[in-house]
Image (cartoon, rainbow, N blue to C red):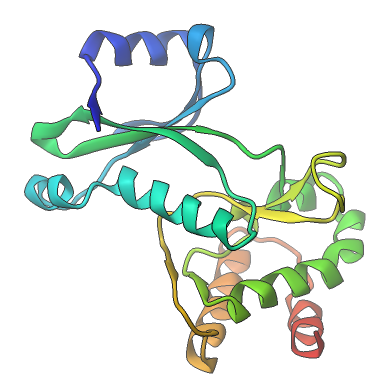
Length: 207
């Protein structure tokens, strides 16, 4: 992992567009200039610095992305993992984003489009589970409907924000499947989203 000088990081943030941030600072920055087309993802953590130095979140994110792509699931392409401040265990990565729109954003912009996507979405989630992919943070904000022309089928989906993910050799068991759908239901309630989760589960079970 390359150590990024403080001035280089400041330049990235100053010239780029911050897409996500929290109380600790920027989390996702769309770069400009030489890095145009890449996103910088910063992994703030509350864990002790020695733990994150041993297991940097940036490397885990990169491994998860590689594992998903190897299994035929669209995910961001990580180009480099970085140390922003190794003494504090602050890591980051540069990646090429997926071309598409999150289902949460699509639901807010065009609710009528969602029912048309439900059968494909149910099959996509089943593909994850049958493939042993356990994405604990599965919710509409982390699933992208990919742009037409980017894949053979315009209704393909991809995953983002994939730090909280495990890949098993066998299909997921009922407990993890139930937990995935329970998390999805809770995220819909927290975001006050009117989404037909019952119909999605019915289509999932029938897939």
